Every structure is written in C-alpha cells, then in structure tokens.
Length: 326
Image (cartoon, rainbow, N blue to C red; front, side, top):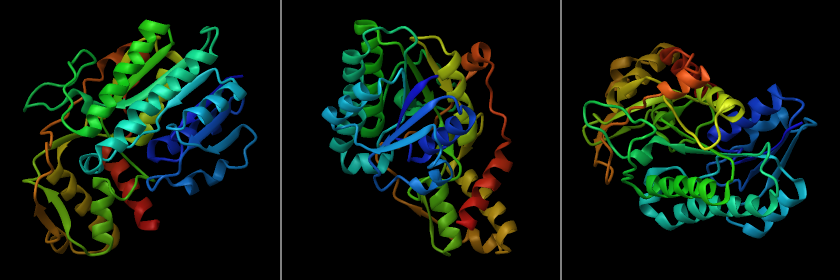
C-alpha cells in the first residue's frame, strides 16, 4: 500500500488530484495538507472527507518544524507537491510571499525527506510546476523539456527556483524526484481571480470583462482532468530524475478565448451574444506580460502514452456550466 502526501490538495489542481487518487486507489493512504488560503476551497473535497483512505491536515509548508514532524510520524513513501502561490498579478504585488511559499516551502519538504528517507528505494518526490519558467515565445516554436529557463515574473521566477532546488537534491542527495511543467489549466473549482472564472463571473453579473493590453497574448489551455491523468501517469510510470512537459494543444489568444466563453455562455443563459461582447473592456497591460506559451508534450506522449483526451470546446462548456450552477 502506498502512503502518499499531497501538498496543496485544497487548491484548484490539487483538489482534483486528491479526489482522483482517493477514489481510484482505495488501497492507497492519501494525506492532504493545505494551509487553506483564500485560493483554497475545501468544500470541493466534501465527497471524500469521510473516506477511510483519506486524511486532511491544515498545515503550511512554510512551517518546517510541523512539516518535518508530520512526515516523520506518517513515514510517507511518496510526495506529490502542488502547494504554491500561483497568481502572477499577486506575485507582482508581493514577491516575497511567493519566495517564502514556492521556494522555501519546497526546500522544507526536500530537507524533511532527505532527513527521514534513510532508504530511497520505492520513494518518489513529484514536483509539479509551470511552463512559465521557460519565459516567452514569439510566433513560432514550443517549449521543450530542454528549453533554457527564462522566467519573467516573480511567480515564474519562484517556480523556476523551486525546480532547480528539486533537481539539485536529486543530484546532491539522490532524492528520487520527478518534475512536470504544465500549460494553463482550466476547469471546475478554479479560483475566481483566474482568467476564465473572471470572464464567466463578469458575464453572470453583467460586469465589464477586463482584457489586458490588446488581448493578443497566446496561451495553451489544458483541461484540469487531462492534467490529473498526466500526473497519474508520471507518478506511477515516470523515470526518476526526468522532467515531463504537459500541454493541452489548445493555443488561443486571450481575446479568442473570451469570445469562445461569450458564445457558449450566450447559448446557456439565453443572453445576447452581442450584448455580452459589449462587456469587453481593454485595460492596461500586465507588467512583463509574456506574449506566447506553447508546450511540446511529445516526450510524455511517446514514453508514457499520454495525450489530452478532452475536446476543448466540450471541456470549456462543462466548466462554464459548473460556474453557472455554483
């Protein structure tokens, strides 16, 4: 029986991962730790809260003493590390918080397992990161696992640093690590500060839809359940010491994405598409706004037989329906 610690399991991606692992692997013991910040939503885990193979602790990864105490007590053989501050705008306002959580919090985890895991046999430390560590692209090309790091925001700099620390513990202390870098996620339970929920909430409340700059910045969108399936594959079958890029293959400009959301929302709410388009309002561009992200996910496809299976328009419609119901 695997004994797995999942960090940040009440956040957006983490809550999907925890639900998936608890339900799919009833013979695993799953521990979820989360400091329940503003971006957490524990109610999304209500269906598994009483499951025998699941336990939750309100714990901040910045608290090295409590973290080490728990890992020593429970003797986890695997860690799936998702806990992070993730909103770029917030990192511009408060870079220090991102350094404390994303860098020092990760180091706290690494230090704990380095002390406690006397034998590395059968152990796994899986660190989940972002494609933003690679910086920005022009009109062509895609990020590969070998793309040099070039972070452009305090958020991406903090994640890049945490990636480097994880790799360094593999080479220096032989911690059995895995890393994945994913493109922009979307789906149910994402916090309202993120782009897709912002647009949906604006439509619901008939408020202006803010668009940074000219709206032509491009992102590759990955449905959260596709990401969870990739995490499952990497955790169980990935090669120790390797990095895997996870992408959705759905590149859109921000403006194209917003117009897609408007079109689907109009059909679901019976609101006029033209009137919803009038809600679009161009605002000052984000500082250091990366132009384009694109993921080459051929490595995970070729070696682990994973590829996105959810059709983008269908997944986007399901996401919108979830927010409308909520």
